[in-house]
Image: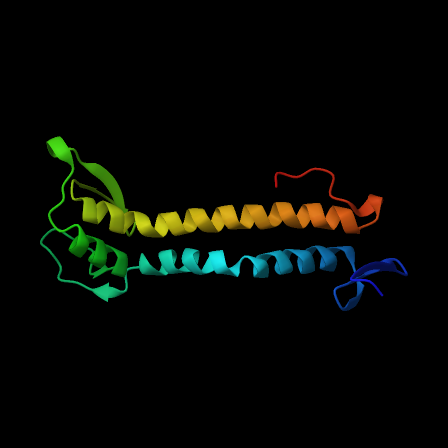
Length: 149
């Protein structure tokens, strides 16, 4: 048998026999997702580096008791770099909005959001590739005719 074949109303795909059309879609999706794990490692690393896991000293008026690895490192690397002309940028800290003009704080707080954006783009690319490959394999009546991805 080939890697993809139709068999008694079900499909044979990559060593999996008697696969329904839904199972075939998810097999193709998981295969595509597995092919992109190299990119997913950076995505996961950015998301994890931005999570508040390190204890920190609580400053007067602050409710935040933890900080992230990304925030700690970016503040150390960009120690006294500030935005020009006293410009301040709103950033999100554990659901609270904080304005700052320190570049290290801005970078550290943006890292997990960049990871989330990479994850969304990766899933969109995998979904589009899955739909295209699925539509090539399945019977015409089982094809996905239109979708956002």
